[in-house]
Length: 142
Picture 1: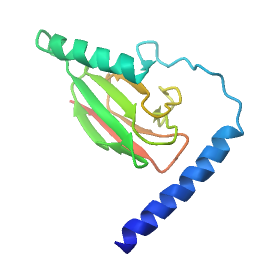
Picture 2: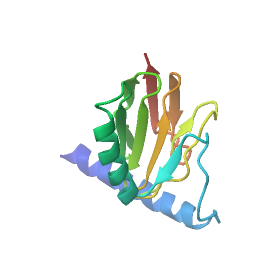
Picture 3: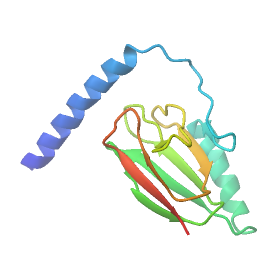
Picture 4: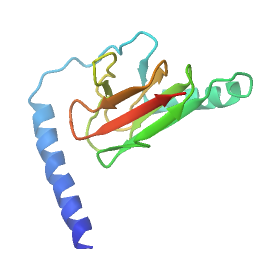
């Protein structure tokens, strides 16, 4: 119980620091995703895409995988996919995050709460949140 209280206190403190830092930086309202095959979506668009993809998965070999960003973690942290599969990252945290490949081959726009961003898996990569450097994940393409 004590660990949980300490963890929640640290996350709350970290969140306040991050929110303060985010409010001091002037950023454009909309950022373009890179590469061109990736895009940011709102939660409403995400739901429509999810329904569309669910019906299309029956007719094709590629699949859609989901990574949730919550409690300062990517979940799942390690994701195994096939080349060409789509990966949708959704921020369910109360602070903004992004998804950045370690060699900067791709970077999502800043994802606020309930924002999503999708990409096609081309090769195995390690990624992190450039806003919160302790957050790390891995995509393994088989």
